[in-house]
Amino acid sequence: MSTFSRLHAILSGVGLLLVGCSSHLGKPATPAPAALHTDFEVRTDLVFTPDDAPRKLLADAYIPNGDGPWPGVLLIHGGGWEAGDRDQVASIARRLARRGFVVFNTTYRLAPKDVFPAQLQDVQQALSWMQSHAAELRMRPERIGAFGYSAGAHLAALLGTLSPGDALAATPRVAAVVAGGTPSDLTKFKGGKLVPQFLGTNWKTDPEAYRRASPVTYISRDDPPFFIYHGGWDKLVPVDHAEDLHAGLLAAGVRSELFILKGRGHITAFLTDGAAFEAAASFLDRELRAPP
Image (cartoon, rainbow, N blue to C red; front, side):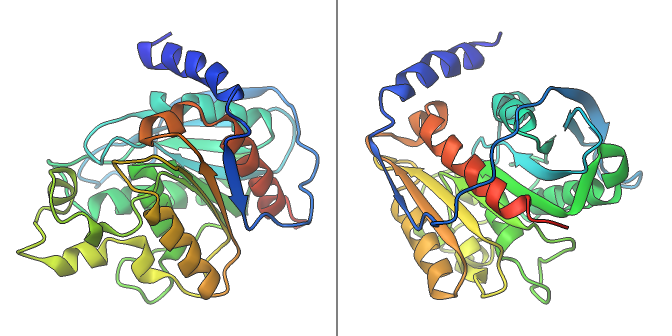
């Protein structure tokens, strides 16, 4: 077990003591379907990029046992767009697979070698691969959600907010989004290293690039439902990013839930996500298990 995994296991136990330290806004009255509990298989190192892609990218597929077809989740790791890998979110993949979701735990190109929109294009390609290989994944191609944390949540949120006709849009679209610790408005980061490195420019030179890469820019009434969770003490990505995204979606008439983990920062909200994960999984149950 990696050091990161051991730390996750320890802090997940601590998280059980903090379940009451949260607030959940927008929770629907309709209960989620009963959670499934199933074994699953893992297919590792699947190449999802086309032969002419600038780089070969890999993903792992977690497929519940049984005939299915199951709803799907595209899982996107964080790491400030410059680091991170599939192992970072493998525990989330396992929890979702046991619950009866096909999970595609993806990679994407990283900054500073590759800059936006390369990362978005990669997760769009992963989503397209999932849909085109739905039969072999035993997955419902029209019921795929996106789940990410931090930089991964930023990309997941873009998958949800970009609409046909937007310059960066691609098909297919996702049917639901879970976004944790989301940098939803990059115009709020006028300094620092990560965002300029990710965009390949800085605020003074090209402020429009910051707006163009922000999920809040693209909110519209045709967006899928969102589940947003965030640490209330997050200093790296302040909680107003979550509040603004949630408010913007509601104003557009989009279903949105906001789950604040009080007393948690950016890292601890990820490592002690028990209450948020259960609420997010129930959200995915409701949104992705609808009858065909």
